[in-house]
Amino acid sequence: VHAGARVDGQALMASVARKLSVDEFLDEYELIGGKHELIRGVPMCISGASRLHYMIARNIERTIGRQLAGGQCQSFLDPAIAAEDSVLYPDVAVLCDSRDFTDLETERRFYFPSLVAEVLSPSTRGYDLNAKLALYKAIESLRGILFADPVTEVFLWHVRTPEGWVEDFVPPPEELDM
Image 1 (tube, rainbow, N blue to C red):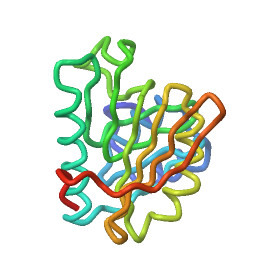
Image 2: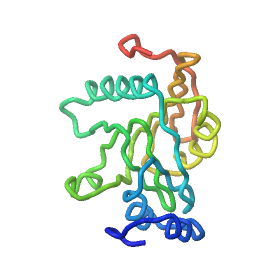
Image 3: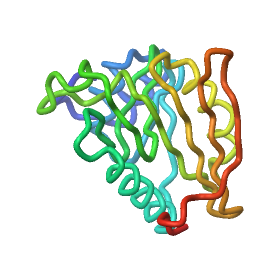
Image 4: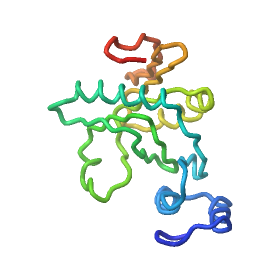
């Protein structure tokens, strides 16, 4: 299947039968409905989120965005983060590396996030805290991973240190309405 081509069930099944590159995935899956991530070359359908999920993600992005105002970093909602053989869509990402801002009109993905944030949902909690966390930790530019849990109203931080990744639970900031 090529960009601009009609995607039907048969063509889609053929593409799933083999592993896709990041470029193939972005070309093929932007033509079909629904949200998908590429996990180690395999496209995965991602379920839709609740209104609460979107509200929390937006609040996180606004809070971070205010803190970044005037600096070189920018926050984004639902960006495509490409990493080797995967394309992930965190709820929020902070991008500071100038290499991610070379062509904002045509570029569909970012490669050098500094921070990503995910709002946990009951249906994706296990996936986010295990498989997706491992993929995020492999991104060399990433310095922090935040999981916001609306059920427990706790933030789970993973911070990269010179010794490796450190995990910490913290309450959300007061200005962030969960």
